Image 1: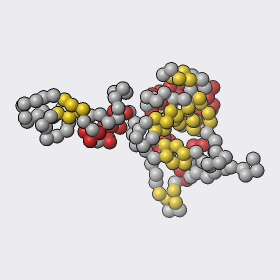
Image 2: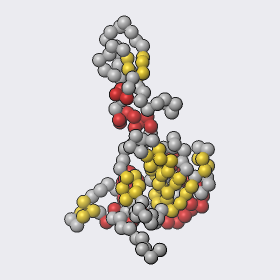
Image 3: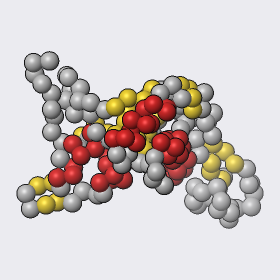
Length: 187
């Protein structure tokens, strides 16, 4: 699948539906031909690529000290594979991890991993800095606010894993999701 272009799909000639698993009512032909992207829904394409759609949101204050940025990822690594790698540094059965992707589901070749404690995060930096995954050496760094752009934006999916879905409070957003930039203008 990785060698095919994103605009592929199968369609059976003379069928009323586009699914390849549907039998033709016309028995004159049973050949398969390539068609345009219309053959697949966006949901089916997400399943093929191995990711899900999400939006990038500011990392909450509550996750700044326990989240890592992981760079130089292979373009085919999934969220689950990234999580499995970093489970070695944690006592948790599941470590929230998410690969950043473009809207067309193409990997940006970096991702984020959230830990339960700062100690687990530090252990992960020591264990996985330069660690090889799928032929690429990982770059593992703690997250910090950017001097020019402010708070780093992460996939909303990782925040849902760590602090749960958005819940509105009387006075605004849940405090676990609050994001404030802590840049010093004198630096």
